[in-house]
Every structure is written in structure tokens, then in C-alpha cells.
Image (cartoon, rainbow, N blue to C red; front, side, top):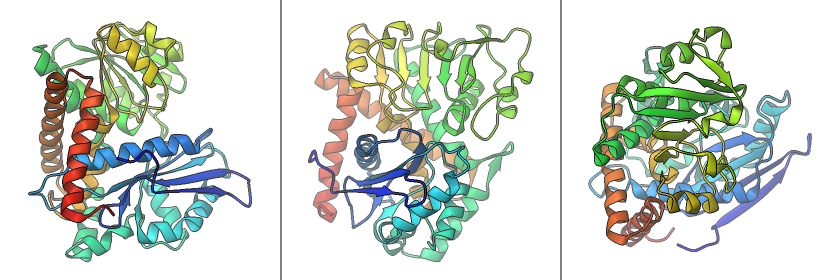
Length: 392
């Protein structure tokens, strides 16, 4: 895979001066997939790294027998606080500027700082048919595919949308797969999470239901800790749209600690599920967990991972672990799964468990890290896709 992306576009909002970026890393059948994030400090380099990750996430789910054929990788990013009063206007104007790309070859959706409802509303205001309309020419029956996706987004489980659960289901299954491989029981296994929004909250829910003990959850206000285990359903019910928990829901045994306390929590599994670049060469020294499972995109910096690996901490990479949300969209649109929660969860669990197994098998065979193994698998599968469909 070449080191340079196929296309990089920079944008400046004429009203506020805010900056935005679009990076298309690769096209497959003329289309690329990747979400749009909004956060203060978002850079072109960050977006390029995320776009490269999307290329790998797509390729890793290549199944020659499936209806879904993976797309290329892309990503969008806007340097703006999503809580800023100007944020929605910035989002609409960004999509207006990027409309030709969205119409022709960039399929996008929610990412950090944005919900799918907000992206859909802004896309409509920008005159777009859909944020994923570039994929429609690849489908056998566009109307049927759009109806499947609409039906899937209407499915709720215990008051939470299926689209907000399926990614966390994949992260949780990655955790369970690595515990099974190590011969570790679920009961009593301790987990700390950074982030309690869509991905972190759903991951906590599925792990809690599997019998693991969630002992620390970090949000914007700090870290909530209870060594005996937090009441995950109660915390989920008490969070706002940004994943911040109302402290009025805490129980007597719960305590509040500093925002960075999740890093040093006495746990078996650490799940960074919020921002990129959360674990660096300095704070990695606080980590005592045996496994780090990347629910967020790019949360562990390369120099930190090298140090963690040297002291026996295994990092399961984002390109595998959090790939379930993106894959579920396409499994649904292309018709591999129906708009049914049980079917979606079963398909996600099976796919992620197989992918984690393939990655760890490759790591053992090559004597490398899981990340290096995932990248090698992605290269192999990208070559197979290129042989079948060409390079663009």
C-alpha cells in the first residue's frame, strides 16, 4: 500500500474561519468509506491516519462469498468543538463544500463528536440525498437497500438504537475472544474504559452482560471507580448525549477520581473508547492491565505501544477491534444481514471473533505484534480485492 493518500482536501469556513479536511486513502470500485468527526484540534495528519485505518478496516472484512465487497478508505474531520453554538452551521457548510465528493465517491457517517442524526440532518440541508449515496450505483436494488438501512436504524434494544450498539458488540467480542484464547474466565475479569459514549457505553453493556466487572469509567468530568463493580445499566441511563454521567446516579460504593485515573486502574483489560492519542510514551508507564483493546481510533501512540509490548502488555488494534460499526452498515446495505438486532449481533460476533483469531494466529506465526499482523492481513486482502476489481 502506498504511503501517500489518493486525495487530500483542505477547507476553511468562510464564516467562522474553522478548518476542515477530507482524505481519501484508496478507492475500490470508485468508492471510499469513512466517517466524519468534529473535535477541537483536529488536523489533516490525524484525518490521513484515520483514512488509512479505514482502508485496512474495509479490507479486513473482505469475504469473497459475501454480498458486501469492501470499499476504499477515507475520513473527514472538522476542527471545531461540537458543543460550540456555531458547530452545526460549520457542519452544514463543510458538507456543502464537500458535496461533489459525497455525491460521487465518499460515503460518510457519524464519528467522534457527531451523531448520525446530526450528520443526516446537515446532509439534507446541504442538498445531499444521503451521506452514503456514492455507494448506491454499486447496489442491485437501491430502494431496497435504503429501506433495509432505514429499518435497521429504527431498531432499538432496551431503548438504545441498534446502530449505537453494534460497534460496542464487536469491541466486547474482541475482549471475550482474547480472554478465551488465554484461558481466562469472564467472571471477575476487571475492565476500565475511557469514554462512555456510543462505543464505550455499548462495550461496557455487552461486557457487563457477559459477566465481566466494569470497575472504572472515565468521562469528561473524571473517572468513576468502584473495585466491586459499577452498575453499568444505571450509569448508561444517567449519561447525556455526549457520554457524560450524571453524578447523582452514583451509588455509595462509587467514588470519583481524576480524569486520568482510568489508565492506572487495577484491571485486566483497558478499553480506550474516546479520543485519539490518549496513551503516550509517558503515561503508558501507569498501565498495569494485561490487554489494551482499542475501541477508539488511534488511542495508543506508536512509541507507547513499543514500550507496552516490551513489558508484556498486548495491544489489540483499532483497525480490527472497532471495525464492527462500519462493517454492519455495509452488511445491512448490501443485504448480508437484515434489520434485526439478534441477527446483527450474531453476525458481528462471528466476524470479529474470526478476525481476532486470524490476527493473533498471524502474530504468533510471524512473531510480531497484533497490529503488525492486522496490517499484514489487510495487505493480503487488499491485494485480493485489487486482483478482482482493479486498483481504483
